[in-house]
Image (cartoon, rainbow, N blue to C red):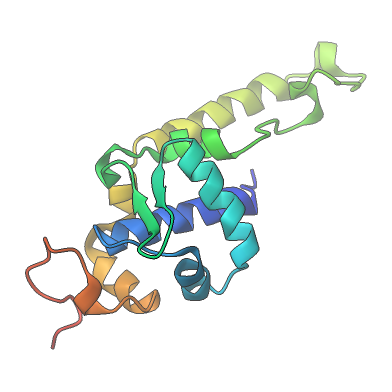
Length: 159
């Protein structure tokens, strides 16, 4: 199975916002951190906002924040919400023209595999994506330690 770039970028945006904590982030800031297209991220952010994952504030002090705690954002649900097509093969769709469909065992096997794939993702949350390597994410994403959430007692980059 191959996840779309849209889902990949959705995961990246949510990870970034989770690492930033309670401080607002801009689309440009996220695009620069990941070295990806700002225009593409605009579509992703709009979709994430519409689906209730993030809150977007407009204006001079605008920016993006997670709408829910990272512990409540299940990866399986996010994948289901961002992937437009989870049809692994033609026979999953209504326009199936495969001649061997009536005798083929591939469809139920792949359907079981897809359920297992999503079941594994359902076990994990956005918070699980951070884990003990959160300090490394801060460095890789070039997030300034002083801009971290007020709940941090020490900078993860402090010597």
